[in-house]
Image 1: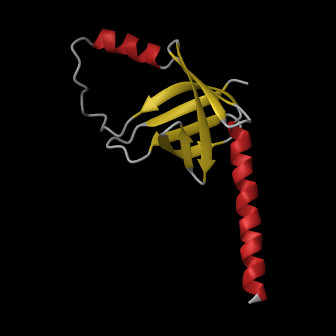
Image 2 (image 1 turned 135 degrees about the vertical axis):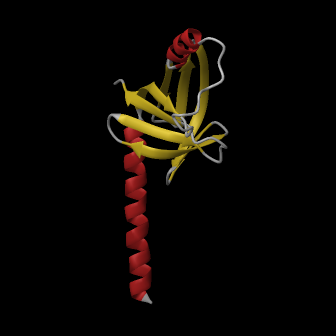
Image 3 (image 1 turned 30 degrees about the vertical axis):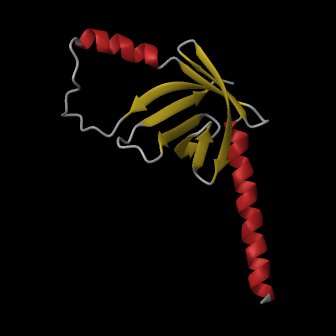
Length: 129
């Protein structure tokens, strides 16, 4: 019985330290560099004018996220600014009331996708600071 209690404590402490490590990596300013979806490359998107959609998609990428130590986040999306709170539990990143599944978090790259979404859209951010 003692062995079971000791193993539970060891695993609990290890999961807490890895959680705080991921949260520490989030702190700072991130810029959106790519958005990808799960559509096959052979499927053409429905657009009226391809040149307009290319210029629009480049302006959409002007999104930054600033994660603060106090669990607040500042979002700047094409000049529209928002403040919210965030939390990271296991691989689930919650920003405000929206949930995302984190694919990768390291010192330079953050990749996540929308949880329970019909389309598998991935967002890739690069750390600015």
